[in-house]
Length: 133
Image 1 (cartoon, one colour):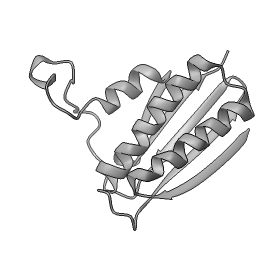
Image 2 (cartoon, helix red, strand yellow; image 1 turned 180 degrees about the vertical axis):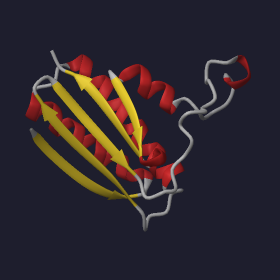
Image 3 (tube, rainbow, N blue to C red; image 1 turned 120 degrees about the vertical axis):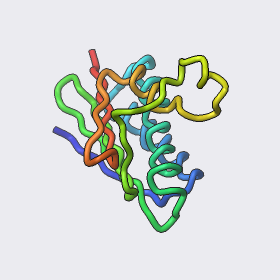
Image 4 (cartoon, rainbow, N blue to C red; image 1 turned 30 degrees about the vertical axis):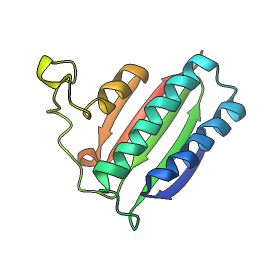
């Protein structure tokens, strides 16, 4: 299994670093365009949530992004230094009362774009798994 890991301060401009990390993974592991698009959106959304909600934009706190590849599976793990959240009771962003809200779609997107989504450590870590052909 191959593992690659980076740590970034909680600044939204560091999303560019995450995008480069994913671009490098696309080349290194020869990901096709379909899975690459899903990974790019889901992982940047997860990192953005970790920066904004987990670490509350505190640049002294880091977000760790790890990638693991084994057989036909690529796994991204995103961890923040925040206090976690209750991932069992999330509002449905497709419910009529939530359609106009500007936030609340990130986890919904992740669950639709990744093959598997797992929250760990009280919501401080999310793992996104994508199956490659």
